[in-house]
Image 1 (cartoon, chains in turn purple, yellow):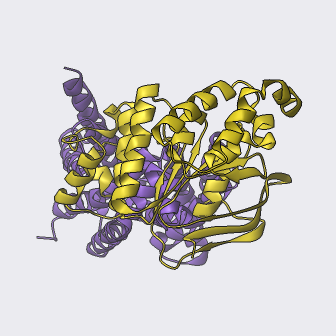
Image 2: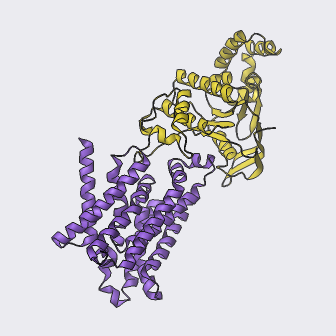
Image 3: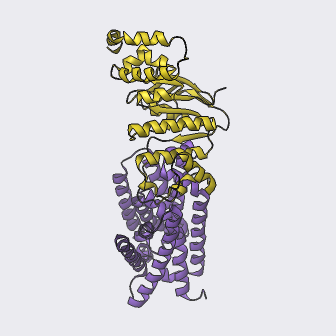
Length: 260
Length: 261
């Protein structure tokens, strides 16, 4: 069954949404959208690093995304103006990455697969890594769930209950870097943040608890993945962007339904 | 044995000293109120006791395993987060439905478990915050201006509630307030703060202290006199120096200018 590239692609999309659903909810609650963008854009720099050092692409992106995320988290804790800082970091990381990758002619031709993903070419091993990464993120979030929610609501309430908000922030940073490494192959560096934000935003109007929002976001993400795959096959469109197009469609439908 | 004690603490934000040489102790079952003008470091003191802001000098001692219930000054919940009152009560520690319902009963919010937190009025939110704090079965309740945004009736009701909680659970209460006369009625001890502790003692003693009058001026004296007047009638067997103080008060208007100036 896994021999079929379509089955592998579908499973990869569903696996990814297991992680992006709950993490995306936190990205929205904590207003980290730009943060997610900067971390995802750094992945392109990670690709160049991996090529230069002969490391696996996934590891390279994981390391650079983690470094980027920790840097941003550190700067924000020290009270930098985050809008400007993130704007500078997100786009510089992307530009540096694109320039660095251009030194490797073999990749140059294949650049779009890193920017927009290449889900139809997911191998068995890569599928395994996607699920491993997604389940690791899910386990991490489930383990810290109560503390993460409390410190998201109010850092003071968390402190008073003996929770360290800075540590919980680090948990999210690590989860974000993992998701970036996992999602690069599927939706590409430019659209990872969209995969985090759009399904969770679509879920908001139908949820009365944080858990319901995270769970619905998983379902909407998986539906977008499978729908995007279908759209891509039917109209011969690039798959990564097609997934986001379907997600955006679901978001629009959810918003309309709420307003009635 | 005090539950929590600050021992000559100083707190600085950068070079700015917000609290200087503050010492205080909270014993089991007492209600202590911190009073002070804006910027006097009231919230900082509470946050230092909670361990949210670090102390630059001195130290804070807590009884081992001390359970603190904290009611913050305000809680702004982002509209992007859906969360019901019931779910909120289970943060950070999950509680049973029975316990949650009992806590809501106690604060007069029976049956509000299904309501979204963002739909609560200011007074309802304060009550839910108190319910959540009580669910941890605290030995000390810390409340930062708990009646902000409540009308006078709501305020009085909230302090009655605090008093009830204290007698029912035996928890000590440390709160910050700005509304003087209600606090006076509800406190065992008042600490008057302005970067350092200006004066402290029973409400009666503090309200007559020159430092207190200097800090709050003349405007509040009327309200205090009113309170004291009512209070004397309710509790005729009070300590002996009541008359001395009242005497001071009645003919004290001329002197107050000296203190206030």
